[in-house]
Amino acid sequence: MPRRRPDQVRAARARRRRPYAPYNSPSVVIDGLSARTLAEISRLERTRAYLHPGDAGQAVRLWKDHVRLPLRDLTHHDEHACLYDCCGDPLEARILLDMIMQALSRRGARELRAQLHRFDELWHRRSPLSPLLGDLSFQSLRRTLNPGLPG
Image 1 (cartoon, one colour):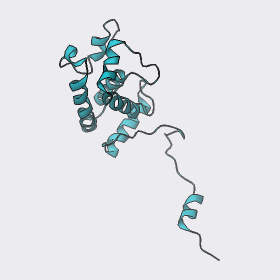
Image 2 (spheres, one colour):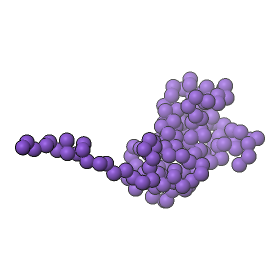
Image 3 (spheres, helix red, strand yellow):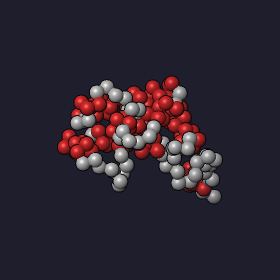
Image 4 (cartoon, one colour):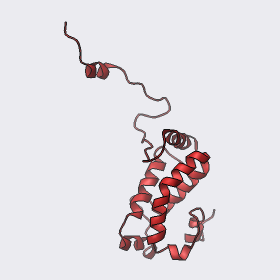
């Protein structure tokens, strides 16, 4: 009787799923972060009411893509008060990342901050909002841009 190939054996074996992750849940993949920090972010997304699975990865991608836009498109946010209905507001995404960094452990927050630092530097160098904001952190950015909003 012929022997089965290893890939056939693996394909026939039942796969174990993590009990807390739904079948179609988005994964948290942020380049440059350790598995420990990714697990901590995943745990935060499951336990915090203001987060959903995959929000951190989506916010990082949105912020990274926004910062890399040409300068003429970066001015679009300031001039036309674009609401970003289609894909989300990148400044709100950065504020969400700041809230996630506050909830992470020191080590995890340091890793995430190091990954976001180069994109923040690029934004501070190129954005038309930078001279108006000065050295404000992203935590107070929401109150500065929208003074009528609470919190």
